[in-house]
Image (cartoon, rainbow, N blue to C red):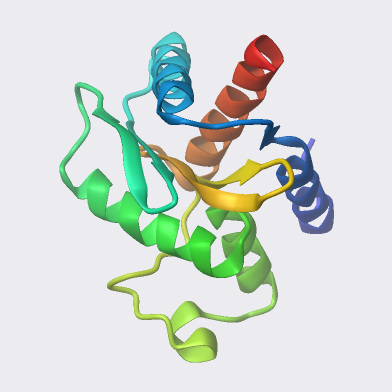
Length: 159
């Protein structure tokens, strides 16, 4: 069963309201990063994982089978999250639906921004977005599903 685009966009908006951390520091980034690695392994998926807090990269891991290009994809996806304050996949689907492009409608160059899934805003309770949690290496929607499922299960285990 395929969800309509409107339902998908609503669901992603809801994810951004639910996947919120009470606190976040370098130890949290390490535990979350390792949790995402374990989730990718469980799914037999190879990704590069990046966690950045207030411009400070706290976690980066490139799994076997990934490519150095994944880091450039991460940088460009993170720029989209930081500009639009929503997940890169949410922004991508919304702009495509509105027939907009980053370059033409927002003057954001393709060299630095990309409409692709996998980057999610790192949201702190009472502070809002303070960083990004990103995976790269899979098709758009799979990158998004991995990062959101990983964050959700991490929050359920760690509160």
